[in-house]
Amino acid sequence: MYYSEVTQKVISYIESHLTEDIQLDSFPAIIGYSKYHLLRIFKQETGRSIGEYIRQRRLAMASTLLLNTDQSILTIAFSLHFQSQEAFTRAFKDVYALPPGKYRKIMRTIRMTEEDELMKESDKLKGWTLSGTNSELYTIELDSNVVHTGTRSGLLYSKEEANEQHFGTMMQGFQAKIYKGKRIKLSCYLKTEDAYKSGAWLRIDSSSGDTIQFDNMYKRPIEGTTDWNQYSIVLDVPKESESIYFGVLLYGKGKVWADGFRFEEVSEKVPTTNMLTSEILPKEPINLDFSEE
Image (cartoon, rainbow, N blue to C red; front, side, top):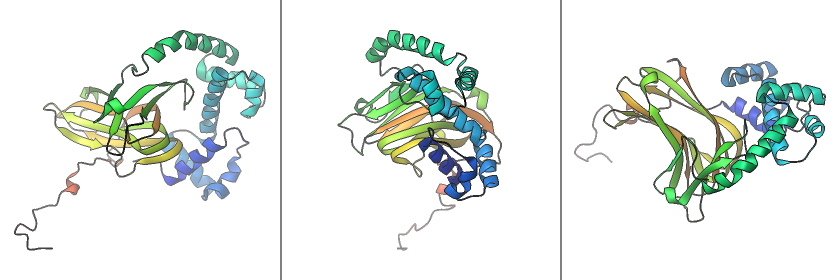
């Protein structure tokens, strides 16, 4: 389960035109749906209006420009279509709790003090571990240059030796206690570069270690180079569940950035994406005497 075609087209267009003047009235002609339909579906699936999403992404881009360039605050404000430096400062402070100038100064100081440590421990992200069938061919690290929201994203990328038979994953796990008997949705933002195949994944294990619910986006992989988009997985957490594992995986070569992981309880009206459903198996054995071709 992931965003509908409508929402994905809207997000893709926004991501490609963040520094341009985006007019909501132009979306129907560009995306191919009525304005009312676009606004309703986008708000329903993302929890934000299109205008709120654009504002959030522009502020995230502003945080990156403040940290990685010497552009003036006024230049950044106007390039991201804020009416004035004052309006930009108010909006930025609402999200980052600091005015742009102070944010730039503090974050650059923090970055300088952390840079050496990050280089030494680039494969160590708090709470996250590197795993997979060939984890030695992959690396995970923090990235403060490519972000969706906030100041950092998690990056998983391959080494030259990796091929289509290998995969690595950036993952973590936690106890299933608070979600037992519920249906949950994992959502996250992912961005890829030259990825053979990539995607988010979610697994529910029982106390005996058996996997009882699972989805790794195998039938809907992310391939090649893609901009930020949100992807979702929905699974049930049966009462016999003991642990929950999740993350992002990468088959073969490439890079995948991850940001904004989120868990939420959903109703049974939301269909699951479980790959281990009984529908995968036939209702009864067939061709027992091998007479059927």
